[in-house]
Image 1 (cartoon, rainbow, N blue to C red):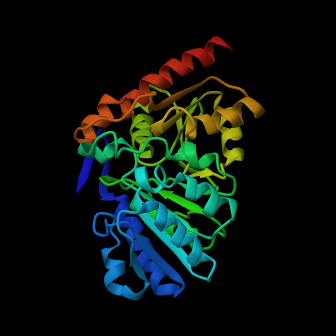
Image 2: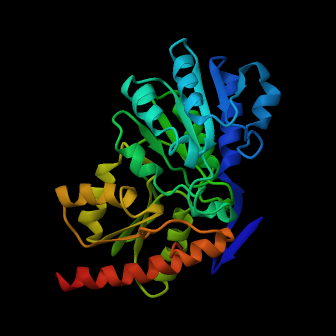
Length: 324
């Protein structure tokens, strides 16, 4: 499947399938990897793991809080548990267990946050998790990955194994554009430069990286250079890349499929204001709950498209130029 806009063409694959492939790779390489799932095996692409390693697959039923506790206990006996469910429940419903049982005690548990963001579509507001980054950023010791596509989700899942302590991997349900390749390195905590530009920077996460690349192309046609950073690791944040972008381009916008409060934009703003203040603005869900609809329609309705980045970039550039 491909998506063509202007001169840039993307193939598309679901990030949840990258998660599933990453677990398969880990299962083959490490006998201590176990997977716990909350009655949604196929929709979260762990059915192949169950078929290949049935003795290392635990079906926990719709009991996310219990699943988090079991995963914590298994980690104390030398296993590396990966527990997965819809992020609305695996983070929202189990936050106390994530905070106390896993985070406070430093358990080596990996959490798959599936069906995140508004692009889960018809499931509606109750299942569209827009607050997970804000919640988990507030917890000491958590690593947070928001990979951009199938390949990067696979690599993030594999990378989580080698990180001691809790790791959260956020991914969606729908197919998203492939913007990275198998040859691209995935370095936790290190932003990936996707496109160069000297006028303004867009720091994006998840599927918003592809929208930022489309915005880069559109702005290039009118002589504006948009640097695009793929901030696949929200915690720990690549502060050096942010500071460099602020110093070299003098203006920053962030793009995320998450609430405006507490997510990527808030994290970047903390770095910018402390180190090199420049005009900033934000593409995000603007303090509202989700809604039912087709994924593409929701991205349009919530202002999470390339044209929204283009318009915001132009406005932010005016502020930048007014200060010169």
